Image (tube, rainbow, N blue to C red; front, side):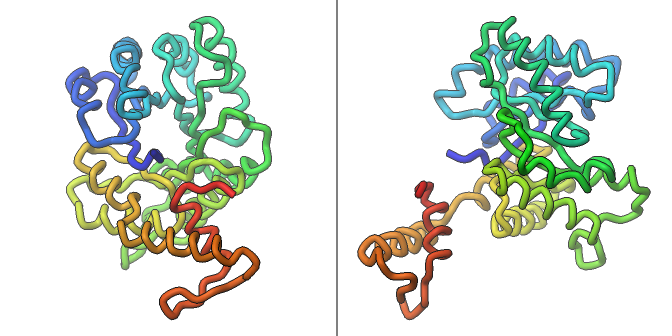
Length: 293
């Protein structure tokens, strides 16, 4: 099962953490960064590792992803975050304000040491990098495509920090679409993730009460090629999951395309239901069905 919905849960809220595993989220990101005040950081670390340990079994029972967003590398807090949460063997670490591939490499070096200290299989802790939060970071996104980053599982992006960094007073135009700057960051994230075969996770829909807007955003996100989407409220997860789940009609069409080419392996194009289908259609169908060439 692909990870579709990635739900942020504040690490300092025992109430929200208790409810997290019962949501529809594919991945829980226990947040130690933006949603936690400085005075609550230590309590958030302690509650994060308690939650990680309590829900280890659900990784196999429900494929619940157990991730943690640490504080950025330019803070004094991120090492304390890692030391605390690695005792709970999270599946991955979300790295905010990643400045480039060197940020992921720096984090990876710390993870190797902490995996050994905590009896975690070496190299098993993955990284999801948030790659667009400064102007310099946003224009360096393509560098992730070819860098040696064995832990990098995916890329995601965000608009709030970038808008503050460049002094943008708007992120969307009058029609509700991203303006050029943010569309550029989103496109770079999408293409770079696919270039290295990593997950491409779209940014969140900030208005959690806007179900229709979220549905449109999630459906467009999947149509554009993203593999999942961030969420800030449990109610968003079911909508995101539905948008990123192929319909029965889509699956049936994909199977028909794969079967048609299997029966005619030497052709470059063929006709199905009065439509011309060629090899790119086959590749898309195989991807939808999870078939590796």
